[in-house]
Image 1 (spheres, rainbow over the protein chains, first blue to last red):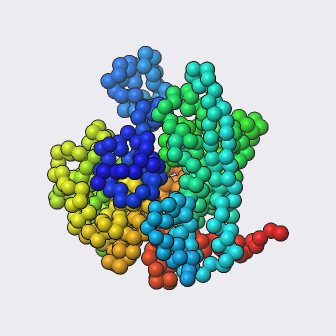
Image 2: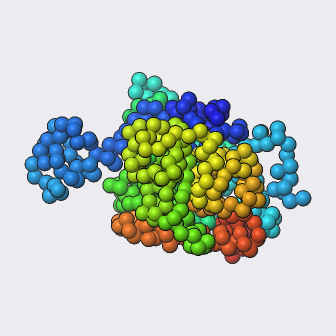
Image 3: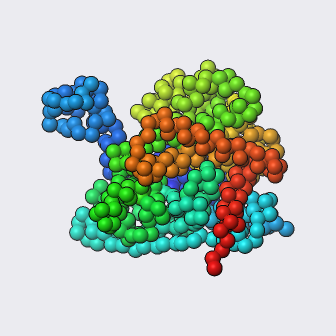
Length: 88
Length: 433
């Protein structure tokens, strides 16, 4: 079942060696929901934007236990916030 | 002999040489033959309208200049501005981009949204560049494209290896090229933006939500109780996981999942929310403690009501299609069924909701993002969902009815629906001069 196809997206996919999807033809893969590349800095940036920082990374002030923190785009490490209208 | 039939008669060796664009044209010709499409219109739709290739320099972190090649292919814009993603991948080439641009025309037409079809990309492996370099590459590409993109002309979106961040850079670069007093009117030059920069709520789950609306409509058609349904999913990325999570409240039971790491099964059901959490941490379904690992070959033999392929292309083949024991296949992925697989499914009487319709939730919500930006509005999630439902269900019904009208499979019917819409506009507008 291992993919023999090295063309298309598979060529740079970091999961190609473990991939279990069937491949019986030689057409290149153009779409794959599980396509992944290695250390993609852009992906990391957007993850940070959409998820917010993790709880246990040393945030201080109101941010530390704020329910909105994961969506918050302003709380920063080393910059404790003590007044915030969005604190919940 | 019809054109599509002639193409199918090519021997195996020729089929192996068939390009991606040839495959897309083959599907088009099959539908065009069946609906007896006007020969002149066939000529028009068989060609892309514009193909832009740009070569541009970017300064790397080490001070050296590197040259890059970018593409933007615009297939058709009679229904509205060109619309389609930008992908960053070393194997991006003009043939691939042509195929994907053409495919976008059909996808927009079938969903009845006022967009045409386009696609583009840069031939790079983004994992080899720093974030700063990627920003400069993206911005310089947007600059090189110049007025070949625009909020009322051609609207890029994220695709392979591109995302909301890259869209924000492209947006910012584009805005800096238009007069200052017009910038706020051009936010809709790209979709798939971060929410804060004008993105739409509901974009992340849009494709999965669309798949679920299609499945619900199929169940209504068949008088089938979805609360007693069982289903299996291939791929547990964005589409597979969202579809499963959204099917949970309907009462449907997830029996098995196959992803890049392996396949798991539990006859009593797998909780999609728990599995999604597990996959997030472990990068795959392998080792999920509340299910049993199964052989990959066995996955296709599991008896269930619905199969949702939500991974990649060419999974339902002449080898796997005969094994399937399901009533419906809802194609969350793009191109999961080969032409040979299609024939087998049709002969076996297995219902199919084709990819071009089933996973169109994404492009529909992109249209909503574009509309919100144009109107300077932010819609609530409920509004996005409601409007998505109002778009995708009529599209489902058009495909169902067309399949009955032409006594054909639903994939061909979907193409006929799309081509008919374009045909009507060409007939009304005529050809200049």
